[in-house]
Length: 126
Image 1 (cartoon, rainbow, N blue to C red):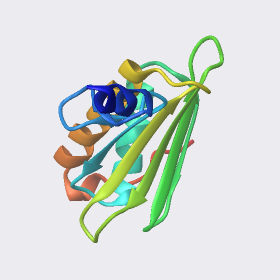
Image 2: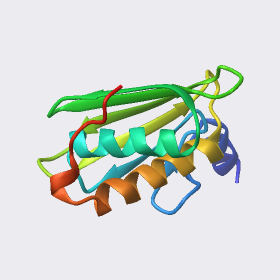
Image 3: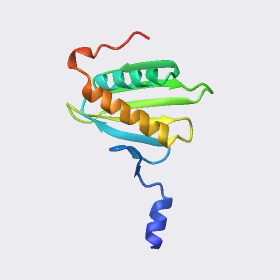
Image 4: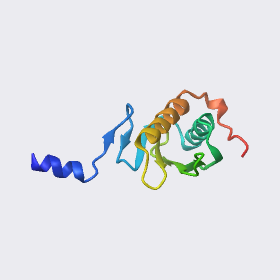
C-alpha cells in the first residue's frame, strides 16, 4: 500500500480523456497524422475555442501552436514526429497546467487531425 501511495505522489501519468495521458501540467496523445496536419488541426482547435493571439508553425519533424486565454494564460501545443505516419501532441496550459482544458484540446486536435482529408493540409494565414 505504501508503494502505491508513493507512486501516486511522484506524478505518474494518468488519463483524462480517452487516449490522453497526463502528468497534471501537460497532457499528450499519439495522433495518426503527420506533424503538419496535426499542427493545422491544433490551430483550428484553438480558433474554435475563441482563444486570442493564435500562432502556429510546423516542419516535417515538429510543430507548435500557441494562444492565450482572456486572462493572458498561455496555451502551448507542441507536436513531435514519432513515425512517418504518427505524431505526439502535447498541451500545456499556463505555468502549472489545467488538466481538463489540456486534455480537451489534445483530444480535439487528435480527432480533427485524423479526420482531415489529405488535401486540406494548407496552413491558414496568421
